[in-house]
Every structure is written in structure tokens, then in C-alpha cells.
Length: 225
Image (cartoon, rainbow, N blue to C red; front, side, top):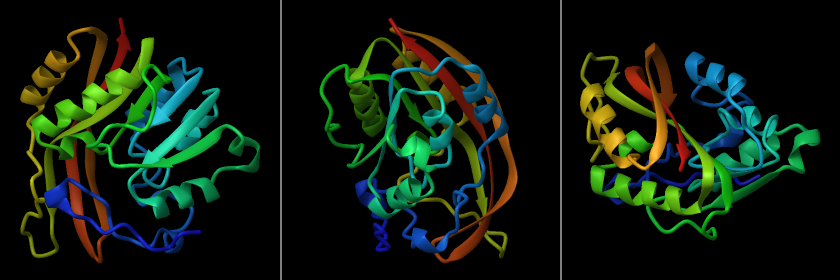
């Protein structure tokens, strides 16, 4: 297992956590998953080949693997993907592939390679021009009639033990109303459904320090026309 973490470089839009995933146990460093996202994954039809984009250490990957024909889990941090692979039950590993790449660059896949794309906990970090580029690549690799599931955090608060706010470099700090409008614009050629939810305050331990985190988020499902 690769234990050397990929160091964050937020000025280059690399938002890794810089942690040794071999020391973080079986559960994702982000917990078991948001209730509404888990509910959606439970109910929605998932079949064929899926891309789990910016999968990290696999917070939702088993949910996808249990329903999809196959899953390509991708991330820029190889050590996170190693943990994901190690924690995948033997009976599901034949359906799993992993791919290390930077989502701000061209994806290493042919056009229309996937029946579905899933991405959570990531897209809100990028300024709009980079986000447009990422979503253009998602559109390119998604087949006609394919399905997209993303979440998009807004109104984020990270509170340090001394009460000060921790803001990640270059993070746009989207508000719920503007983000919903922006996403509708970006996916004008998709059939979309938007559900608004929130993450109650929780304690996060990463990068060698602890903070309290809460946010609203948009859970979007879209079908490519």
C-alpha cells in the first residue's frame, strides 16, 4: 500500500488532505456519508460502467460497486485510492479499477466511456472557470442518456478551536442560491433534479489539526439528453 500522501497545493487546485491513509482505519476520513446522498444511492437506478470522480478514500464507492456493472474510482492521491482498494470486499474487487489523475486536466478516457459519473465533496472547491472545464470533461466522457450525480457544498463554515474561521485558499465560497442558478445554467442540456440539504456541525481532523465543519449542499441528479 502506498503510504506517501499527495501534498496539497491549493494554488494549483490540488485539494488533497496530505494524510497517511494507512493510518486512518477502514472508515473514510469524511465519515460514513450524508443521509440524503446515501438515500439517493439506495433508491436510484445505477447500472453499467460508472466513474467515481475524486473518490478519495472511498466514502461512497461501495454503494456504487454494489449496484453498477463496474466502477472506475479516480483521485489525484494514489494513497487514498490504495485505502479504497484495500477496503473493497474480495467479491467486489473484480468490478473495480482505479485511476490516478488531476481532474483539472483532460480526463484519461475516451469520449462517451461511462454510463454514469458520480462526484461528491469536491466541485465546490474550484473557481468557476476551472469548474466549467471539469464539467466539460464530465460531459465528454458521459454517454448519451447517461446519469450524473454530484453534490455541491455552499455556505461553508470551518471553525478552528480558537473560534477563527479556516478558509481554504482559492475556494470561491459559493452561496446556495447562486450555486443552484449556476448549476442550472451549466446543465441546461440535461434533465436535472436539485435537492437542497445540509451537513450539521461535525468535527473534522485532518492536515494535523481539528476544526468544526458545517454547510448547506445541493444534491443534483442529471440525465444527459
